[in-house]
Length: 499
Image (cartoon, rainbow, N blue to C red; front, side, top):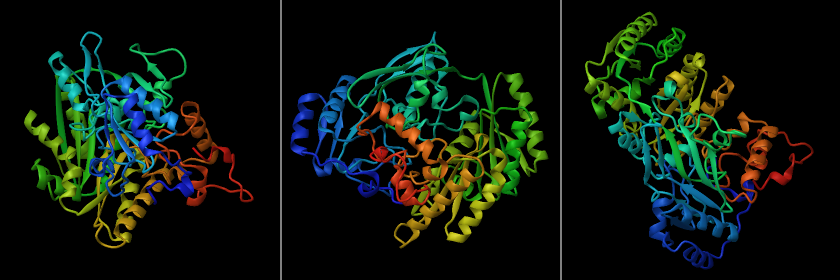
């Protein structure tokens, strides 16, 4: 995979009069910080997908929505591409900047504007950290349900862009299920309000269209989220298995039993050992796999569900199943899972974190195929899953200092994503497409579907200046990747190629 912007395939970007642009931006948004020296730009060269780096032309850090509006209007006038960035914790290269583009950082828009405990909503700016919303709502007995593992650092604007999930999304949904309204600014500076504080709003569901659009349609400047009452009680079962396939089948068995856990997570032996060594969560290090199943609600219901799920797990082949003794142990069990990524980083010089979604019934077979790919390419793979909704995160371990290992890791990653599509799944569950999965979009979607995506992009951003080269591949890229039929040397509808 070539993850950097390729003008030969993705289309040429205009050369920019840098001094004139700097002068215009300072005049348009005088209160915004503007970074243009090499040492100032370097920290913004990548997001969490750090294997691929590009130093941006400029970085602008506005402090108000009005400044964002002025910056976008200025960039539109200069026809300079803009990449919006939150905390930079994304793992798909969605905030990878362009050498001929402006990086728009929203980190300084970090105010919690309102917490309304009566309506159970909060209004926040895009730079507010995910966890900070729950902290602000806690005095009212409320919290914000989506909890990605990076919630201590990731921002709500980035969550909206990627439709982030987390370990509790099986029961409580992804970002799209927990956001009521967003205020966005288009590339030409128009401010739009999508959605409302009501359960539904008139017209097309543009809110759902925008959430997960990865910065291609507009820039978020305000978000209204739903707040939920904290469950009366939450308990976690930890089940260990001597076979990964048994653990995979147990996931389907739990859902088939009519139980919807608050969280249902799976880890294989490599990730178990890494997390236990790092966090000391109390995991059984000899297990081939573990399942963490959280059940929450009122005391009586949770107690009954725990007994039902324990029976299902034992019948599915669990060699041990234990309930967290108290709240501290429950938090420790989750700490091990939420720190699985950094834990694996301690046992390998580098790792490549994948993100795909599969039907739960396919979990045992997919795990077996990943094991075969690992053996074939000679690279270890640690498997961590949001098992309840089939969102898998294989971590491919490699050493970038060894010639060819990064390329092999990329190749395994591509094969895993194509396997997800083959079994009826998707190439992403919550990390987004960004630049990382741009080629696999050509596998999942045909050219008619891609043309529809381009048409939506054109409706919001006809000059293709917002985050170009991300999420939706050009038809030329798909032809280059070998996944698009080319008739007599002609691509279908070549007027869409610049998008």
